[in-house]
Length: 265
Image 1 (cartoon, rainbow, N blue to C red):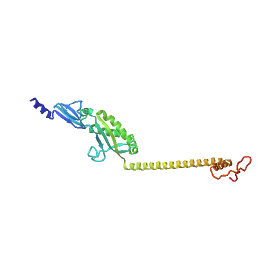
Image 2: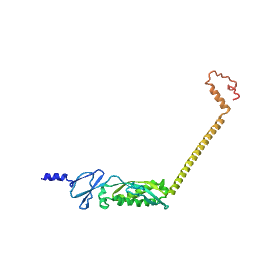
Image 3: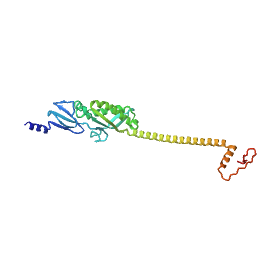
Image 4: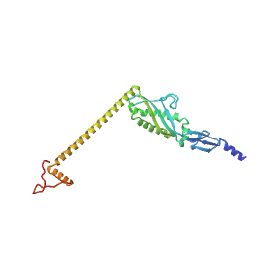
């Protein structure tokens, strides 16, 4: 009889549970949540204990202008005011995961819909706070990553104590009013043209300086050579070159020095 009861207990799903990979199990007994989570694998349990499976894989929460692209079926764009008071629309994706050791706290304090209860409101609040510090042209161009980093830092500080670990914030798209976007594009193009022209002028200036330095060096070298080509030095060079020439005949013409007489050199 004992053996039969044991077999029934083992094979009854009330006495055991399996937590899949990428999940953690939160135990609840008569509505009281236990602090110790069940990691992935097979576990024997009290048949009165209910195990709630919670996802600890990387998840994303996307707010997008395109219907059906984000976590909501309808358009879920974020509108925010810039430093100069202009309205911009933004697409944002947040990557995060549930901290396994805090899953029981999350379930107890927030529940399973923590993405809608905590993550979404924090995103909307923080992104408006950050965008208000930037001008439209900045977040549209070179400071977009800086703004995303600032959103990440603030959002991480809000979510981590609640048991949610932030992985990344992707500021995917910034949509400006049509006329402003065109104006900024033209301005950026003009700045790029100016930088290119400045680079070309600087390159030509450096090339001109190089040529001046080269010409100055050649002039100075010629001056030194001209100053050193005296008649005696030319005589010396000529005599020195004769020693290696076959058939050279030395004819002294100066009885006092024995040096040949050179004329017309």
